[in-house]
Length: 488
Image (cartoon, rainbow, N blue to C red; front, side):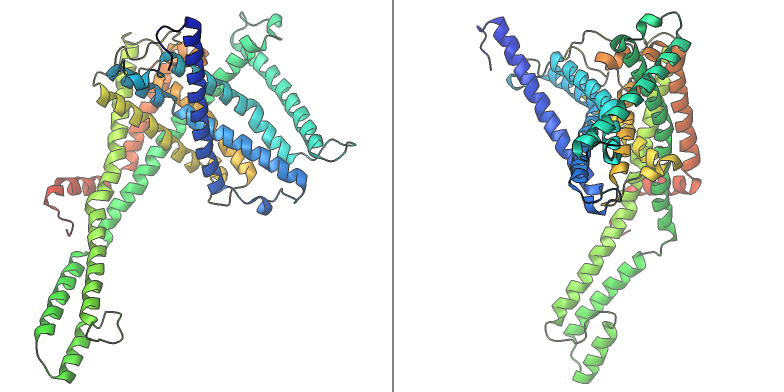
């Protein structure tokens, strides 16, 4: 930690070093998590259909694995941008001058947004396409076979695809804004192509989120509703519990009753005929009691799931969905009446000045939970759509091509999550860096359209996917929750 009397240049140097160390630690953590996830799902290299066993294939798959791990880590980082920023703001608000949070400042958060934006574009437009082309390539015709031949082929094909994409981007941008784009902007990639291209990608990502999130809502409600209603069709387990108690009491009495050896043996066999013991010895009483306790514990756990776990599994997403719909409705009304401004770019931010919610820490925690809930439900809905079922990963049976496709789709969704959360009014934290410079964020009708689509689709999902039987069963369980013991 630098001293107060250090020169200003040294303080800036120390701050930059701290930021780089924090960025490195975050990156290593995300990379490790991503590697564990990919390693859990991907096929072994030798069982992949495109792997021929050569050294070149091994190098290509190893490089593709590194690129996919990097891209998935950036996807997770994009989804966690808003939660990290909200937590940082609340921590600085509660502990403004604490010694251990001096490294947490606006420059750190803004730098994190800049790096995530840069790496997400780098991974989406360059690294992931190169990884796919690299494992598919065989080398240029007439050139020597090897790793570099495959690199040259993948690089040339990627360059040609980039030129085609730039041409299409220029044509589309000229159609939508012919007064702003001219022939002089053909070679101005950084100021014209990339912002417009990322605006298109973010718009597609937001539309995918608007489609996948309600589908994820429906999938969750369908599964939890099925579990809840299925309990009514199962046999009552109270009778089994009473039978266990009766048998237990009968066994205790039988041990204290004197009878003839033959009659006692026949009686004991009759009482414990369902118990998997071939013989009954003097130490059999402890075995029988242990068997009864095991059976009783299983029934106790089943009753706990029936009365507590399954109702809460349905109640928790239901409350979060209704809460998010109410927030989006409020945001739509505030946009229509001019109370809230459009989510445009904010150049200067100051963390720790005011809370992002009128509820303080509780409101900030609710915002974080809602953002993560939208992210999880969008992923569930993504793999529930027929178009993306072919990409659904399976444990130790996902090819490298599927891994690359999953990383690309998740990167598009995660990069658009901060934009969607801000445009829906889930949080009031301003979009930083180039996330806030997206062109369509300043269009009132597009932002309002996103709010209306989310509200309508979420309400339709609530009405159609939560059946009357599930509602009645949930109401019955919650109403009688105070009467239940774990045996009910």
